[in-house]
Length: 121
Image 1 (cartoon, one colour):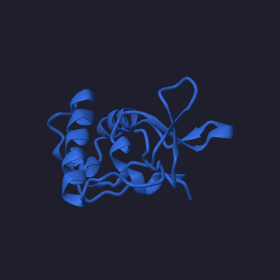
Image 2 (cartoon, rainbow, N blue to C red; image 1 turned 180 degrees about the vertical axis):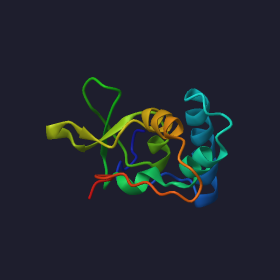
Image 3 (cartoon, rainbow, N blue to C red; image 1 turned 45 degrees about the horizontal axis):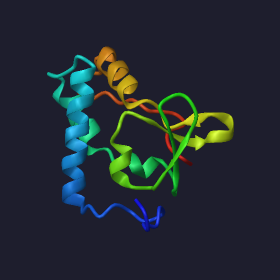
Image 4 (cartoon, rainbow, N blue to C red; image 1 turned 60 degrees about the horizontal axis):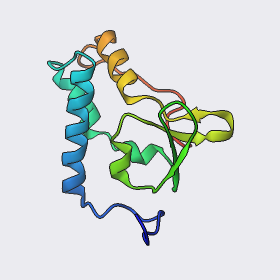
């Protein structure tokens, strides 16, 4: 947006951002064929993806090249890759791919999983 400082956060409060997260979570689980997986949907809805991305501006890709984007938390709730180390093509991971894998794993209640290497350090 013209005249906007790309390092500033979105004008969304936490309540509005929670709505964005819930909508994104619903899209992911439906896209993964997991629309009845309430626990998976809740996990995506309750995880602040932007907390794992580092400071902005961010470099965003859909697989070919990077575009610069402001560190706007709302942008984190798209099915895109956000660079962690662009020079090595290390990205935060594909949310839709994670949704498919986690659903396929059928993790039982009370079990734990860990994502090694998650986030910007």
